[in-house]
Length: 202
Image 1 (cartoon, rainbow, N blue to C red):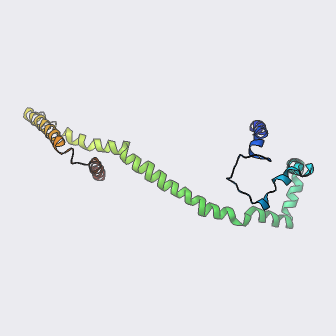
Image 2: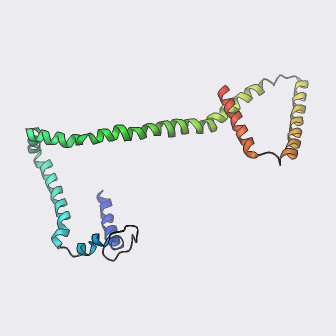
Image 3: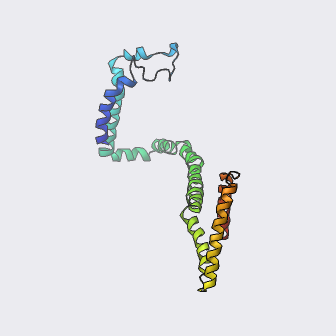
């Protein structure tokens, strides 16, 4: 963090006139202020002590936290276990149960939806069915059926070759005749439908 803080100070110093300050048109008309609320001129000419006040308070907070947590841990513990300290600590620790409501009703909802939608439905559902698992299952069933055709009988091999050539020639003629009348989207939907039917049977 210390390494990142050094260049951040230089970047903020070099780019401050581009973003803030009187006469900067960086935001243009994106942020509109009424003339009655225009106080940028007053902000440029306030006293120096008010400009340095955030830096002074921040340095005092860092110094007091370092001193108390390093040398005054027993004092902090006594303050914490006192009656007023317990009340203040419990009041600030629970924070009116904002974290409980935020975690249970907002964060947990996004966690569950991310697990069910993006992981189970998308990653392990659609992508795997249409991806490696679906293709492997689609190949296993025809390969098992094709392996049963390997009987070792010559006339069966001849019949299979003849049937394959006939199917190829017929499909080529069918495509040349009806290619202008067919819609590729319907063919794609039919292929996907057959694919899911094969997956369900497997």
